Structure formats: structure tokens, C-alpha cells
Length: 100
Image 1 (cartoon, rainbow, N blue to C red):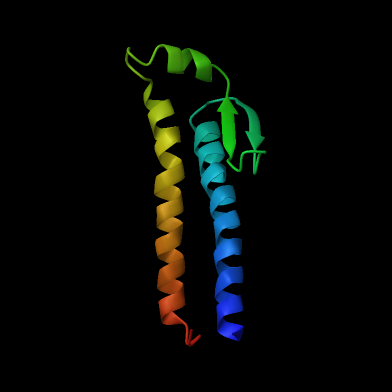
Image 2: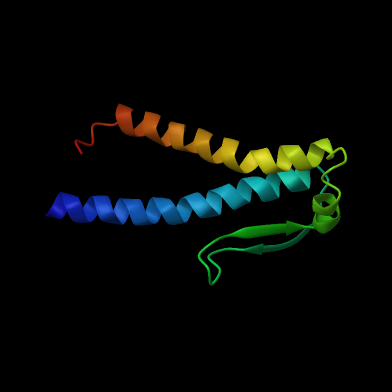
């Protein structure tokens, strides 16, 4: 019972941290690429997260044309950063003598 509760708490906390880390990677790489952040909404009423940058609508509406490289890098930063962070956490967990 105790291990089950701990696992459930871990799943909830890691899910919340994943959202925050994912959007943080978008924000950091976007700002380093020269994009201007307009808003960052975490855990909105529909449960999602959203980062909005200046001129985002223009880039989306003109997506049939060439998308600027900095927008592609910013979008990939979320998934690549979150996945890398997860592998690092798994590596640390596997090296520690926790026993779960």
C-alpha cells in the first residue's frame, strides 16, 4: 500500500513537472533564438500548457511558405529537452540504491 501511494504521488508530481519543464525549454530556447515571449500559461482550464511568442499567428498562417529556422528549433526544444531530462532522471534513478 505504501509503495502504491508513493508511486501515485511520483506520477502526479512528475506529470506536473514535465509540463513546466517542457514549456521552460520552449521559453529559454525561444528567447536565445531572438523570439519575443508574449505569454506562458501553465495548467489552463482545459489542462494544457501554452507558450505564445510574438508573430506566432503570422508564422502559422504562412506555414505553406518556408518556416524560419528559429521557430523550428524553438518547437523542437520542448520535446528534445523533456526527453533528455527524462533519460537523465532514469539514469540517476538507476544508479542510486533506492530499492523501488
